[in-house]
Amino acid sequence: MVTRAYGGTVESIVLWPLGGLTIFGPQQGGASAELKIGIIGSFIHVPIIGVLAGIYALLTGGDMSGFQVTSNASISRTMNGFAIGIVQQLYKLNVLIILSNLIIPTFPLDGGRIMGALFMKCGMATSTAAKITSSIGVLMSLAGTAYGCYLFFFLGSFGALFELVVGIYLVYTSTNTLIRSATGTLSDDPIFGGPCYVKKEDVNFEAVTEKEGDVV
Image (cartoon, rainbow, N blue to C red; front, side):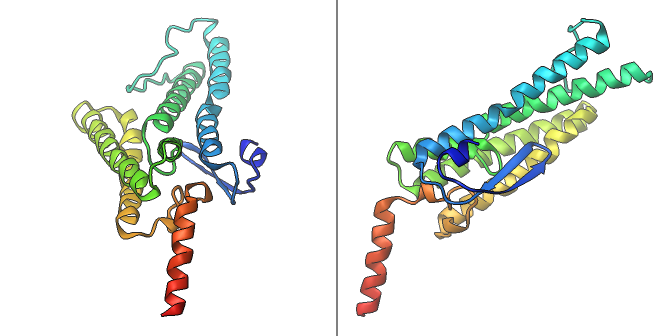
């Protein structure tokens, strides 16, 4: 809805373990619109948490003491206990989605979109913004992967398998952006290849370069 409000066209929506990824066409709102889209996209899970809290309260008779984020998944063999355990894990998943989207700056999380838009609003060059954003994304993804390994392999927390798998995937995507920023192929990047990251001076520079090439 926010994308359409700024003249964008939503081409498709991809669902994956960390939520939904919206793929949209050119929009004219600039970095400010990109920033708003990223922030709203992160908090779309807040209403879902509210629904889960209501379901948990119904299942436990109003006892919310166990409605918390924990790495150890304990699911009872009874039908009611099983349902409570599932709701607990869904709550944990949505909290992690919100935090990951806001903190980790890499595709397909909204954090990469938010940080990139902030850098562009500060007047930073697109390639520089991409290098800084992707470098931070690589480091944070590696840290998350290492934490997931510690929980899964050393503490035996099966629930940490999610953090481990997602961490590895985010290392891969953030590394791709870093490589594109270093090789000058950001036009192929799902975040920094967007129209709001193309500065006017960059377009003019490309036009001048093409004109000089024609003269030669």
